[in-house]
Length: 342
Image (cartoon, rainbow, N blue to C red; front, side):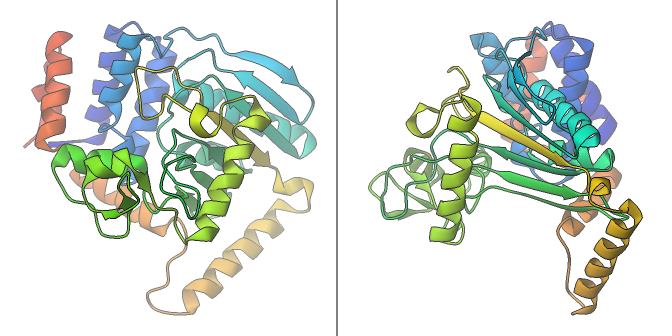
């Protein structure tokens, strides 16, 4: 079974509006959801959507749009998301960071009391579309054990960076070898994990998704990945008045209040010099990289290919996800099958 781009957007919007979400909230969540699936991050797209429904039912996602700016200067702001949809809070945080960057050169907006927001790169892309550099950091429920330990303490702590250019230049990655959503997706599909992804609760290597969820996910690049995840934990925890380490809940446990934090940074290249010169030099650097070998790609190339393929051919829905979404739609009197392609 497959679902096409426009149908996925329409489905997500219909479900959310039937649950009482505003038109704006429904639109933002739908756009973030399809962005993940188009780029191939299916663990954070429609596959993650049932988790949001559990959060709504549990009251850990607030359907009302009432974010609060708690502190603000010309360059920075601290936002309390008041448990709103992570996608809506994140969108407004990055838009505020972009506004500040265009006014003073840089905007840095911290967020606490929000929710899981999908893929990190959706929000750095927002900055890029506005002609500024976008960087997004976030922490999550504990997933990575400190280097040399076996008990999870640090989140998968993603980082995304987008560069305004004549082509798509972006990176969006977890600091673990894989996102927790990939572990959850493997569990749903009944698949084993590749070796080298995770440890069980006793610190032994495992390919069992259930054991990995009870244990820990390895940081990418050994100590270097762990160190980066560690630093992001501080920048998205103590810095923005959010929780950190064992105190972070809600990104993997939808019935618990989400206590993670985010940091959105926008930089206006035109405040450093000519924007045309910046883009020209960026393009030249990309050309140098591509000229280094026939198989060279730059960050963002893979996503561009995946988006084109998904827009043309649709996105697969596995049997387990179909059953989950069918049950949700049946409860809301929505004809789920009418949105699908064979």
